[in-house]
Image (cartoon, rainbow, N blue to C red; front, side):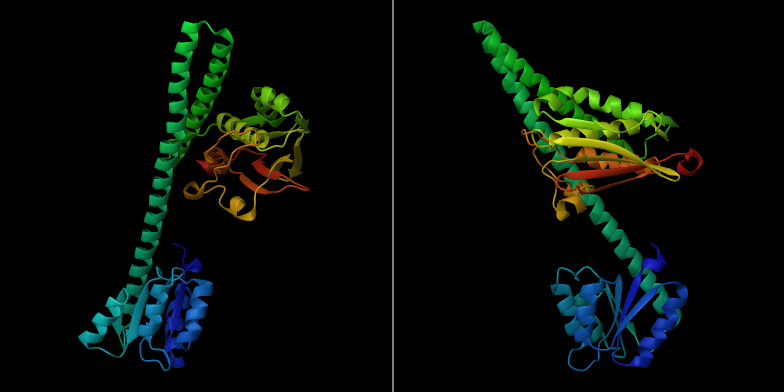
Length: 369
């Protein structure tokens, strides 16, 4: 938990009280914000979403209990921990504060060490709860992906196998050929999915060894295009490969190969018929920038923002009905960052998607391990 990125919001109608709290926490590296009344506090808290709130009770117009109740009824602010600070020391007021959603109650006048200690504890608890929620979201998404994206191909394989038995008995060679082609496509997609799934799992458990070597990106991009020549031909795509044979980076060959196979596959999948896919490079000092642009269906801003999040992964069919889970891009981001690079996705001009990957031009093994 980074103190410099942690905001403590103070709500107190007495300026001197607020100043005391500011002078306690800012020297410790925390960022502080102050509101002198409940109404102002509510609007500021919703806008800035602080990490914790220190809330006075006895305030005019809207007291601390009312402020806390409104915070807890708002989905945007309900998870922010609230600590009441008040001169009301009787048990009834303390219980009321906790019942309406406060996580703690500190009586005034307070000891500086006590306030610091309690704030630290509740910040840590809040951070751990957010981490736990994130992990649960990822776990749920992970199992959803497995359930949906294995069930469908397995069902297709079972059906195709049954049809093949019937076609063989009928000696219908044309239907046998069609069924085997379909079966081959489904099994290849299922294997690609399983490979991505297993690799993503390895990254999450950190059971992954990185072997950094000097890589020729011209060769890697050329190799990444080869498995998709049939799809390129079927969609009549024009592929412009401007990656030179002299373009080199440092990275793990297996990971980088897998990343660009995923990126090329996506560019083809979402390209319109008679579309264009362009690969280009540029020197960025210590890094090489590689861009893959297509003239396909593109993505809106929300889709681009959620593209690399396992709990919000985008599931879209390609222009020829191709299926996917979005897991390939999530894995690509993990691999690129493990190799000291970065990846971003933006709208292509005039249409489609532009993926930008930067990779180091020098060996970062000592930094990455």
